[in-house]
Every structure is written in structure tokens, then in C-alpha cells.
Length: 227
Ligand code: DX5
Ligand code: ZN
Image (tube, rainbow, N blue to C red; front, side, top):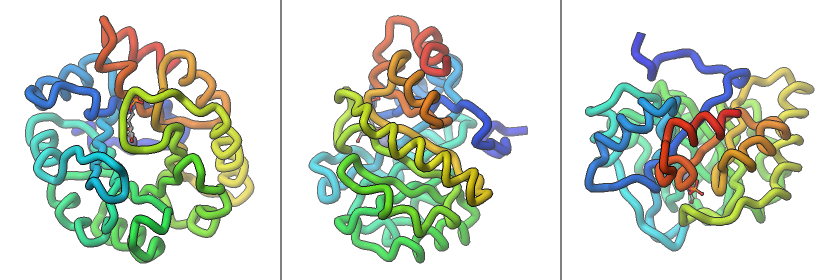
């Protein structure tokens, strides 16, 4: 069965190398390298220069990864109008589309989450370090994944923010109390050491860019993040 249709649950520890740290001149090969190194999902950071102060890549890059590799595509929309672009990322082959809760991402959150699922794609919701957990609580029953940013979004290679583990633990507790089934993803500064801290707090999807793509041996680095 193709990897991308595997039924992942929050019991799985999932390592998601972030393409942002890869060699953009060899996207297909870099993605294959990440999969062969033991990466489960590919994390694709979409940045529009509005919601975050950086510009990365768009649907065409998602399409290239989808066309050249059989892998679950975890698309992280750090953009101002996620619902405006939604159908293009679905068409490009996204398996999970994560949108931000912050008001700077100008959309009606509930409607966008429903629209993602209506197109047969899993729906993720992300909150930045400065955003209180209470902001996402009303949506926990409508999501397949909660992304707790462990850096301020916009760039790879930043320092991990340990204080975010409080939110991860809160998300894990509420998931149990409410009988929900969302993944808990962490993103930013995740490596062997911080990955263990994240798993300990209750996260099961570990995004890792610099610590995997920039490692001397990517398979060793992916295994170390997985623990
Ligand atoms: C940052 C992105 C992260 C980033 C992670 O805005 O959302 O996914 O690529 O990179 P590392 O693992 O290098 O911190
Ligand atoms: Zn990301």
C-alpha cells in the first residue's frame, strides 16, 4: 500500500524531515534521501512573506515532491490567506494541511478546517509560541493534528523553546479527557535531545529540518530524533 495512504495514529512516533533545510536544487533526490533515512512524513513549509517574514515555496514544490516520491505530505501553511490557496495545495497532493490560528492568518478557522476535510485531506491547526493554548481549544474536535510551534515561524535552524512543552502536555491531557484522536506535532529546533523532551511531554510528530538534512549521517539523525 502506498505510504501516503497508511493510517497513521497518534500512537505512532512520526519523524517529519522539513524540506526547508534541504538542497532546493535537488528536491526529488533530497526527499528520497529523507525517506531512505527513515523519515515518515515530509514537512513542507509554505511561507508567503506576509504571515511570516520569509518566502519559501508554493504548490508547485508540493507537486514536485508528490510526483517524485511516495510519501505523506505534511503541508504547513504559514500564509495570510490559507483558504484562498487551499484547493491548489490539495490538487498538488497534500495529505495534511495545517493552518495557523493567529488573526494575522486572515481566515475563519472553523470554516477552513472543515473545507480541508471536505476535500479529503487531514486538517491541522498551528499555534505560535506567543499564542495561548486557549486560542485553539474550541477547535480540538475539528482537527487531525495540533502543531505547537517550538520556534517563532519563518526560519529553520532556530533554538528550541522548552516552555512550549506545557502546551504539548495540555493538548495530550485534553485529548484523553475528551476522547479525541489528533496528532500532536512540534516544529522548530527539534533534534535528538529536544526530540526526547517533546516525546516525553506527549508529542508524536517531530518535525526536524537542520538536525536531519544537515547531519553527517541522516539515518542516524532521524533515528536519534525518533528515540
Ligand atoms: C519554521 C518552520 C520549521 C522549520 C524547522 O518556520 O515551520 O518547519 O523548517 O526547521 P529546524 O528543524 O531547522 O528548526
Ligand atoms: Zn513547519
